[in-house]
Image 1 (cartoon, rainbow, N blue to C red):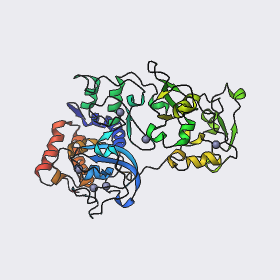
Image 2: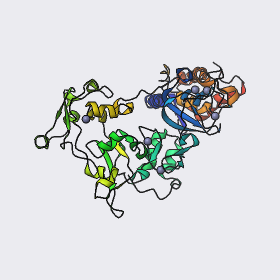
Image 3: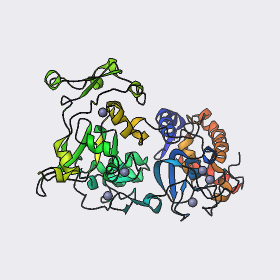
Length: 427
Ligand SMILES: [Zn+2]
Ligand SMILES: [Zn+2]
Ligand SMILES: [Zn+2]
Ligand SMILES: [Zn+2]
Ligand SMILES: [Zn+2]
Ligand SMILES: [Zn+2]
């Protein structure tokens, strides 16, 4: 934390910042495997050291596979932790009963460490592009593979001293690292902040209602009409047949003539704003279809035989904020949406219980040090860490009382002592 030396007062001054950072990184207790919860949507990790193509929950990622090389796959729906099952040779330290192999988990290419339609592997240290997760299949895609940018010329890290190296060396969170790495690239055709969800072409191909809506307001596509043209985004303006949701209940046609000068009212009018995920209109079905007119370019791509235009596209779509509230909910549209519940309702993603101690400023420091302790004695999961944290506070108290300088070697001495005592960090 401190570059060279600092008084505890300095350390305390940094506390708020560290608390926030640590709380963001580790706000949860990682003492229980999620296995007993069954098939749920949760963050899943692939352990590369345990070579089985299986997925483990975030607690197991920290407690059971601590020193193993892992790739975070982020949320996967309908997934049960594989750590306690016989599919993984490495024993689970949290859920000690050996369980049968999970039969309902689905293992896509991500579980072989491969991503995107290009099937490349992912290395957070060299990947220069932001990757986008598909709402439907939950695979990850390169922006360049979605025609949002040219493929960066090199996937090697920038030379020493470049922003990417600096970010990597500072051991930043993955998010800030990827921001740092893509920030030296020109911005993509559609910025991450401009859409809420992404559905990959492979999934759009199996969801007819998305083909119908592609290119209408809030359902952006990227196309070009000839090989030598630039990629461009297409999206009808909200005025073109947009549904105005009145008070969140009564869907109504916005006549093109009348509303052309206005932007979409349920986005801009505070009164009509609703918290994410709550959709009063879910219970309302309208008798007549009020879906916006199809976008002819998008239709020419999805149904080329019906059009004399040639349209090139990856076939991906980008759904802007509030898309779930904008679908027409006539009987026909609703029945086309219902097989894909993630299009209608924001899904719940399980997270381990909140850690009541996550506000402690020493957390990050302790965890980093913990990574250097030998696996066998140091880690009985996060339990050990909690015990060690108390010892560390105890150790630091005299520094605080005397206004003495704490430097890195003091901290290291603490951990050396811990290691030598053979006590590890038993709770
Ligand atoms: Zn687990
Ligand atoms: Zn492992
Ligand atoms: Zn485990
Ligand atoms: Zn790709
Ligand atoms: Zn997909
Ligand atoms: Zn409809």
